[in-house]
Image (tube, rainbow over all chains, first blue to last red; front, side, top):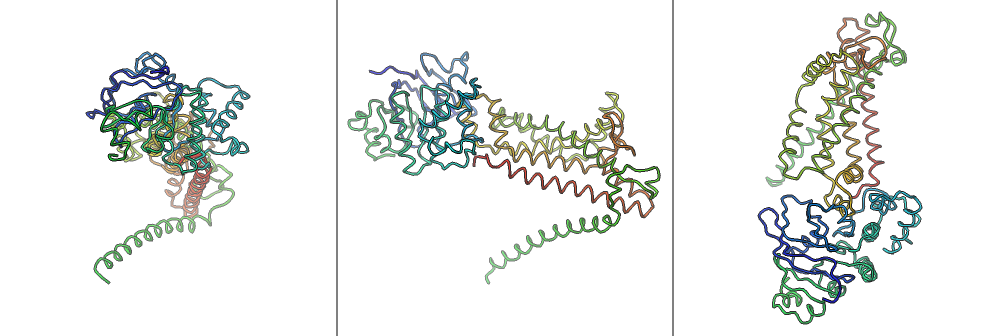
Length: 253
Length: 283
């Protein structure tokens, strides 16, 4: 692989109680590229994504076997501080969930947790990341209004800005446009295109067209197994596995 | 009309009938209190403590009981919040979904909810004996705090349980730990419900007489110390009803009216607060 890998899994297996939801996943995620995880519903896409920032810890009876290396550290090592792992990654969920506070406080939440108290620096952080998420012009006059009043599209950009404000290297998106209207989706997709110069982006999507538009690198999962992975062009135009071919052609979904 | 429509109409009438019946009963209670109490309600009742002849129909008021009830229930509610909120947060943010401890705790609170308040009074009294506290404001606070704890905890538990998991996840994803998430996200999201829970518990506490019989005692003077007996409205009502003098019995109704108004004001405040706290809520 040409690019340096930032995330690498080694023999990753995930169980929910008796269910074996991820089976022996060995992958490397290229740096500063958009990696898209595709596959039918229930194949483990979201589980894989959430294994990268240990959001899986929140699920009851979950068991993770194997390693997930981020920046050369195994994040499931008991000595690792989970909040530090998560600080390296911004996370976007399917439906945006702004925190129950003002627009300003949403962005400042992460930096404050990690010790930033200087008011002027926080002001700068808030403005900078709202601009990065191209939300600044729409909200600059109502920074202290509740975030709940924004439209869903704006909320998702707010969540993007909020995630970026903790200074991550990686952006994780779990079908981040699925609750948005087409225009807002396009808006978010454009942000991803801009952001990939500085960030490693990993997206889960079930929209093949979106995967084609955005992906540099593709992982195809089926029933918890990694069927195929490779540069987007290869996967979409010349897949090696029959199952991948059928999926990208829309024969199975 | 076919059979199903008739059936639906019958049940619709029954449901409407029950609703009207309960409203009627409530109205009747209120009407009785107002009708019998209002003529005896005077400014003097609100701003004076009882004089020596008060219970024989002479001058005076029940300021001692009004203040006593507010202090006692206020203190008890505060004590209960410091226990209920951590419990509710622990059960929802720290315990796993199928946690046995959590379901056992919830079951216990439901049982405790049903225990008669006189039992809380007796229990409070044994604790007071143990610590050597006499019937006092403090003793009453502790007994009422015990009485309202299960109500407050379960009410908070229910509203914190409604906080979407994804909202908590977005806080964790930003590097917050559970404690920060509980305090800064779950509490804020559930704030309208939490404030309602506190006020419901306050309303329950201020109306209870039995838990205070042994624990708070009664006095004709205004509340002055945590360690001295204190008068409360429910007991003031009880004692005034206990006299054969008409005038004093009327004052009992007037006292009930005052208590009802306090509870009404609290309900209105709770509604207003809820509205105010709802603006940040994520749906």
